[in-house]
Length: 275
Image 1: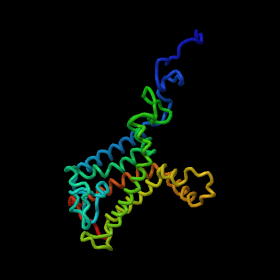
Image 2 (image 1 turned 60 degrees about the vertical axis):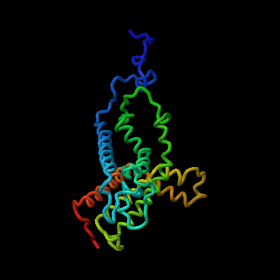
Image 3 (image 1 turned 30 degrees about the horizontal axis):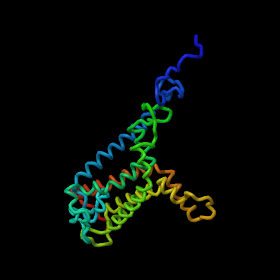
Image 4 (image 1 turned 180 degrees about the horizontal axis):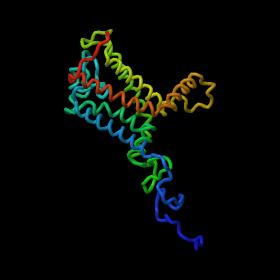
């Protein structure tokens, strides 16, 4: 018969199995397919990681006049010179023979890796921390983002500033896509539409960022005294509601834009021109 002095059945456990947590033997009480969302997220992110890694190290087929892959723009290494019909951009010399994308991708990938949505995505998808709502995580303890390396997630705002610059450069590339292969203006091809779609989603995702919302409307005590910032905050807030959707859509679109340039550059087909 229980006396009320028996030790907690999980007294020697840690984390979610610790003595201060509910003594539930099963890992969860959910009856739905809770594992489907984190598994799908992990599969999607893994597919992009594999593709982007291949393209970043390929160091080829990233330009077909007038399109330049977003993975390689701005191309600021010596081995990018053939793609430029204008000023010399060889800021970093030959980049030791490595792909210039290894330098360029640091900034957009840093922005996405520290993004609030992507943190949730890969924490659940890869680290199972936690794998889903109301499902116990397998880790013995939880320190959050207070220790290295996860404390580096706090530099997300600085990557946001870099992402704005990257979006500006990709906007410039989109404008240049209204040229033909001889760099004459007033033309449009299928690639132009691909680039327009991509830059629209890139800007929407970038501006839907939580850091952007805080920069626009944060630290204001009275919205009535700042009507312009208030309207901007409302607009960014509407984008922020769709942050997850925009994160995935822009991730797919940037890969699509790169793959389209790859197909053109490798000679798979010619860019259909509308005018």
